[in-house]
Structure formats: structure tokens, C-alpha cells
Image 1 (cartoon, rainbow, N blue to C red):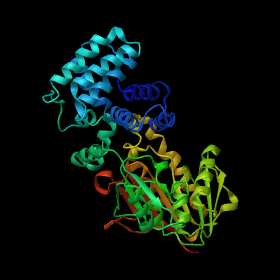
Image 2 (cartoon, helix red, strand yellow):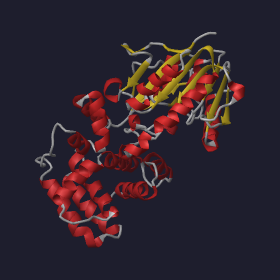
Image 3 (cartoon, one colour):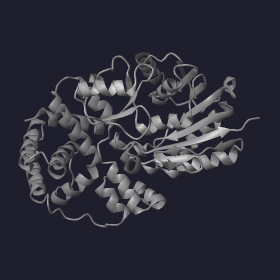
Image 4 (cartoon, rainbow, N blue to C red):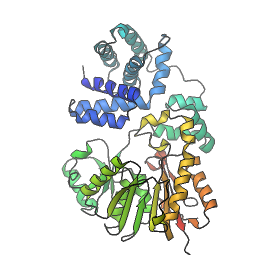
Length: 438
């Protein structure tokens, strides 16, 4: 039996039991060297696929399973088998059933092997004529079909309509690309592209931002130029935000919530490593990773500092030409990469605007007259995005929104939301605000 399934089941258990992020748990599994390249890819696909489709899988598992309650470990196993049967084309259904039963016995659930066999065989028999999910056209239908929470489906339908919300949820099921931002301090796009082609890597040149390539699959650290700092990984929307800010060489920049450092790196490269960037974060451990990344990229104009962005620093009043406020948020724009986010409760999201407001009010005072405040989130909820900017502008009359364009589309009142189904990026919000001169 393929050890990929065992590894995937182990990661799923860690995510459920310990609250581990799938990305971190999968990285640890891959770094252990327990799987070859083929099994590693399958384990990642299985784990992320189950997490992305857990509610959908549960609907059909429960439909064909008459047990009153399934213990969590058994449900993980059934989800793993159901995902292979219902949503993967390259794995024969009979193989998924047989290997799930074998895995059931191997992981100490032998007493449930008959149940696993029966449920998965029923799914296999009906994979092409599954019973319809009830309530088509409703928020609950979308929530089950795309494994989302009811409240988020209701919220997005109210804000954007049913068809738009379904398109967004559908896009969140697709595997994300790895967007490579080229370090023009050391190379250029054509030279780096030639190096990738020499290694027979399949890459795309996206429409934005400049000096970006998109890669499907593969181990990032094994790419040519990684150790030499020829690129770093950052989603296209986040990198585009720094381009929107209009960074120029020689300016003073504050990245107020900097981890994991992508925007600081993007700013430093656009500044040609001239000027000053202060990269702050509440967690010192994360700042250490920014320092490591900056050293690999050859960036010397950046210094890190532990700092709570909600606490005012009097010495920084009007001190920066650009302040980047990529604030803590609900994260619903990055569900492709972090599928666990889709289980977030409404109450967790409702507490965030107060934090965002405090940070935005605070760091805006650091912007010099004529300088730029760039506010961004990796969520798509209006209350954390447009509503936050509108309230800020009402309270801070010295700031004015500045419109910009992205791929031929114009911002509205200085605000733009990137959507995966439209822009092919993470869901990401950015607002560009200029402080008036005295």
C-alpha cells in the first residue's frame, strides 16, 4: 500500500487534533524524507483535497453511513477514501476502497473495516449518480457543495450575489500556483526564465506584476537560484500591492505588520536597495525569518524591529514616506492555500475590525505629509476592507484615496479587491491613501 495515504492521514490527524496548519504539517512531513517525490505529491494532494472538501465529503459519507456517530479518526479515514472516489479521476475506485480498508486495519481501526468497506463501496457504486444536495440556489447549498460555512456563504451572497459567490467558492477549490517574484537586484526575468527552461520547468508569465513568474507544483528550494536569492515566493496580489504603492529608490518605508516579509522584500527590490525599510512584527521569531530572507536576497536596506502596531511610537510621527499596513484579518482570501480557514466562526471575524481600526488609526500618524498609506488584507469581507477605509477617511480628513489600475481594471475610490476567479490570485484587498501636505 502506498505510504502516501498513511502520511496524509497522519497530517489530517495533526490538523484536527493539534490545530496544526496543514502547510506547516505538510512541510514537516516532506522534510522528513519518508516519501519519494511521487508519493510526496500524492500525500499533499490527498491532504489538501480532504481539507478543501470536508463538508461535501461528509454529506455523502453520512448519506451512506447509518452509524449514529463516527469517531474523528474514522471520519478522517472515510474522508480520505471518499475524496479519492468522488473527486479524483486517476485513482481507480476499487483501489481507493481496498487501500482504505487496509489502512483502517493498519491504524488500529480493524473493528470498523467492514463499515469503511461498505460506505466506500456505496460511494463507488453511485459516484456518477450521487443524490443531489438539497436547496440548490441557497446559501446552504453552496456551503455544502464547496465545503464552506453557512454564515460566510450568506455574507458573501448578501454583498456580491449568488453567482459571484459560487464562482469565488469554486475558485477556492483549485490548486494555487507558486508565484515567484524575481529579485532584480541580482538577475532579470529573461535570465531567470532561461535558467528555469534549462531545468525543464513549466512556468507561466502572468499579466501582473512585473518581474513575476508562476509555477505549478515542484519543490521551491530545489529551483535554480533559490540558494543565491534570485527569487522569493509571494502571491501576485500581495506583490502588486507594493507596485501600486509607487515605491521609489531612497524613500523611508515602514512595514507595520511585516511577517512573513514579502512586502518588505518587494519594496526593497523596487527601491534598488537604497533608502530605509523598518519591518515590524509582534512576534520576534517571525522577524528572524525576515532577516534570513533578506540576507538570502542580498537586501541590506531593511532592519527588523519587534513592535505592536497597535501601540503608538512617538518618535515615528510623520517619519515615513510609505507606511504599509497589511493588518491581521479573517484570511478568507487565502483559502486555496490554507483550507482550514473555511471553518472560521463568525465571531472570530467580527472581532477583527476593532483591531484593524486601532492599527490603521495608529500607523497613519507615521505617514509624512505627501506620503502614502497602503492598507491591505488577505480577506474579501467588506467590513474589513471598503467599510474600514470609508470609516478611516471620515475620521482622517487629511488623507485622500488615489485611484490606480490592475490588469486594465480600475480601482474604485482608491480600493481594489483581487478575486481568484477574476485575477487568478489570492483574494486580496488594497487601498492607496495619500496624506495631504501641510
